[in-house]
Length: 93
Image (cartoon, rainbow, N blue to C red; front, side, top):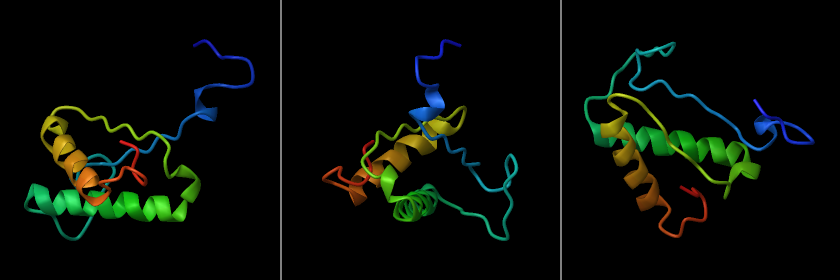
């Protein structure tokens, strides 16, 4: 990997991995969501709380990626983020 003078990509980005749905990967929980709308609401709540906790992240580019079923839930989550933040000031998707 090419490292530019002064650091690496970790100096420029923050990576967060979210297991979706609960019960996959290392995630666990007592209840499970039963529809995409509820999952999108929880995702928006998670990111809102994250950005409120770390305000220096607000306005930075936000890239969502996934695999397999991600082709279903990522468009729904992206839509939910855009609906909550129509001006694009909070989530720079």
